[in-house]
Length: 282
Image (cartoon, rainbow, N blue to C red; front, side, top):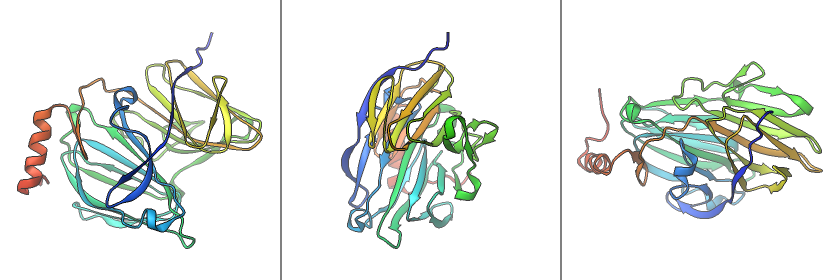
């Protein structure tokens, strides 16, 4: 008999300040990270008030992680120590592998109406890849396939493979799925997942249910083990992000923007940043 995933926990986003004073909602982070392995943090930075986001995230370092920024509305200017610079806009994804070290800035600009809607996910890197060469990938909306599955459900495939549509991010060590799902009113969506993988959804619009529990905008559901999960929409369409990934099962040493495996590695990273040797040239 197929094993449907049950709810492990439901989290409600919490307001916080980050960067130079950006108002956002943290969905999960430092305290919850061990439960979400290999994922570390998810921030929801949807706002229609420019004063809440325009101060942005000035130059800062990262090491040992990947940051995935998904923009749904508005523009974000990006620059980094690799020489990359540009703008990610509505529907675009920025997938940055910090690896051995990168320094970058992200400056939200919003759109003509003053809206800036998006999400940033942090994913951990295994010890064997903490110090790999950094990479930056700018994925425009036109490169992200959208497919229709059962019951008229629409799925944008950022990472993973669904009904033969493969997302543009297919070379990531944690083997993630990153799906943007819209379930029509009164319909349901059932999705197969690897039983050993971490799986969660984050509701970004509408109301519905999973495992006989009501869910709505701003709710995150982390699931127990199982080979599939099911989500139902109420009388309006339900929108959510669906994430799965292979747990690393490694120790996590985390301070600010840097995530390593030991406290000694953290100390070295911050000392190198202070000494000007953080960015590796080889």
